[in-house]
Length: 144
Image 1 (spheres, rainbow, N blue to C red):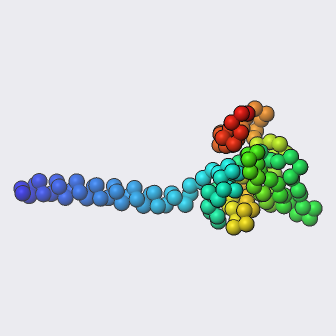
Image 2: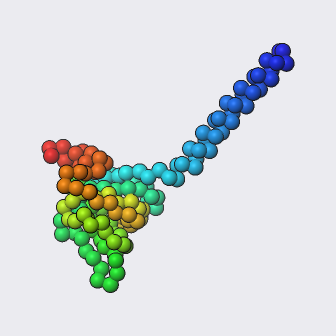
Image 3: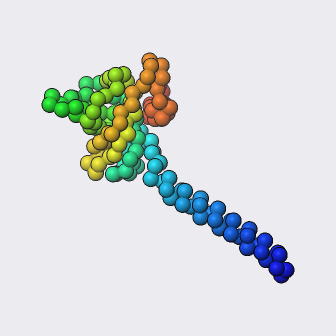
C-alpha cells in the first residue's frame, strides 16, 4: 500500500473512532438526565423505575388533597381514572393547582408505591392540558 493511502486510511479510521467514542460518551452522560413520563396505570403496574427521577401526570383526585398544619407538606392522589398514585410534596404549590385538574409531578417513586415529588406543575389555563397527561387519560378512558 502506498504511504499516502495508508496515511489517509489511518486519518479516516481515527476520525471514525473518535466520533464513535464522542457519541458514546455523550449518550452515557445524558442518560442520567432523561426524565421519563409515566401515567398512574403504568406506575401501579410496576413499569416505572423505583428511586429514579421520573415524571407522572394525570388528574388530582377530588377530595384527596391533605395539607399538614405545621409544615408545607401536601399529599394528594394523581389518577388517570384507571389507577391512583399517592404523591407527597413539600413546598408551595402552583396557584392553579386544585382538585379535579391536570397536574404533572417530577420526583422519585419509592418501593412502597409513594411518589415523592420535587416539583409540581399545574395547567396554566382552562383549556390546556400537558400532552403527556392528555394522551395517558385517552389511553385509560378511550370513550372520553
